[in-house]
Image 1 (spheres, rainbow over the protein chains, first blue to last red):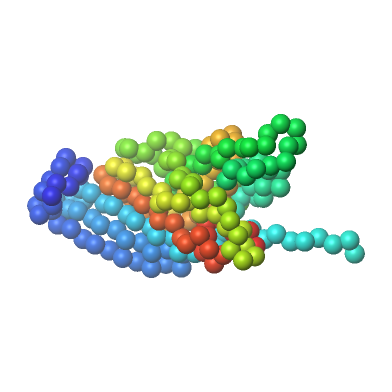
Image 2 (cartoon, each protein chain N blue to C red; image 1 turned 180 degrees about the vertical axis):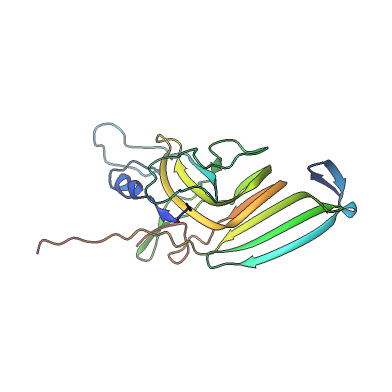
Length: 64
Length: 156
């Protein structure tokens, strides 16, 4: 399968692939790096939001 | 400097003024507009060094990422699901992942601003995540469940 890289399309088997996973309080992160020799030629990142903490409260006022 | 996750203060006021249209409700006429169409929303990415926070009132290109394949202002947010109630909480979440395809973003970024591109780019909220870079690849933000516990926008 051809992978688009900074150096143009490369056969996937010609590249070294590293897969990473990290869990953080608000998200999971998955990333894939492709290297040609030592050089990073492609990096994809996927952030999966779990439970963003930005919420707005709505409050009822009173007359008293 | 740092980005801080928050619903923008101006957005709270604008909600009470009816300045954002996440759905397409049928309204009783206040003069003319009774069948508003849904506004368009966009998502812009910001560098770790930026200062996006609750004080933002509109999209701002200061501190926005730049690089091959990325257009200033970011990408459209898919909004096929109108706001709804989950028990006592009003919730809204984009109906699809936000995807930046074939981009190179070499400087680390850690925030996305959702804003209303129909209404003068008014800010909605800032969301932060662990810093990332992308090289000739795809950056995907997958949305949380559209529930009272996890939705992107929740009004309790």
